[in-house]
Length: 465
Image 1: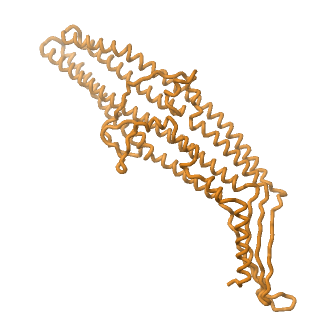
Image 2 (image 1 turned 120 degrees about the horizontal axis):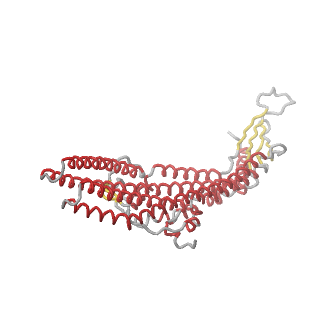
Image 3 (image 1 turned 90 degrees about the vertical axis):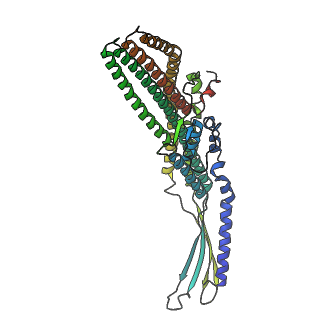
């Protein structure tokens, strides 16, 4: 139990340390600097990017429970569901929360240190020795050179980097959802096309069988018709399996293993004119993979400032008192200590931080080249698919359909043989399959280009090339 004088001295020491600590760093400033996630300007602006609004404009509200969709689904509903339930996206959001906690930790002051020491506790009571004494001392490390402010700033920029990484992953998820949704639409169309082909093959086989029975054609034609029918049935089975695989791939985007929806609803045939590559290239700075480097470079510079501040020695102040048990007298004890920065002035860490800044600048340049190259490749696929889809729709499909109708009608009238019908049928359905592939490639390329420019494709059409 401390005596009253020592208790008073200890109380005064605590008040002094608190006063010095408050002067060294203001907690209110730390609270304002370490804003919660929804108040960070970068993250706030990211949530309003046009590419994300594309999926929110007509997105229906999701039920609070049992978010597994059923019945017919549209892209907007699937995108909203994936943003809520994608497991990889959830992991990235936890990283942001962890960085937010790091900002809080960076703003905390060093803890004071209490030291209680007894002297001459077991002496022989000789006159040359003083009596037992108790010393109570409180010490506080005071960080100089703005270390805490610089530490908080660095932590905040690191948190913003986590926000950019989350944004990049979120746009990746939306792109994956779009491409998977397009794959389901394409697989549904392929299945419908295979079913139509089977029905036509069955009709042709029935017609050939009747003509064989009537003696108007050779039995060999009937065998050929049955072989063709078996072939298209195999294609139907493959189309069914491809659709099931595409459905599971889409369901995986919202963390589901077994899809519960019935059908994806959308228009693959919607093809719009595309902007030029030069127009698109002016928007690549909106790409989160590229936009993040401005924050990365600022964070690297903040790290340099933080390492330089560590070269400034910190001050330790102490205050307390000593009480002598024999006489009841007491004395005040105060002290200041400061390290002498003779050898270690944090030179190595400062140099390493400067090298990291140079590395970040080079990585930014490399990312810009990578994004521009990826945009060029994606644009070539987009332009090729657009041209192919347009040509097939306006030139190839009408001619193939007209030829098939004429040959099919002539076959029933006995003007054409079975091989002519089979050839016209195969040409028509190959053209339809090619058109479907072109449409699928077009829409998936649109999703990829929008990912690279960080905006909707229509946004580039009004830009002067």
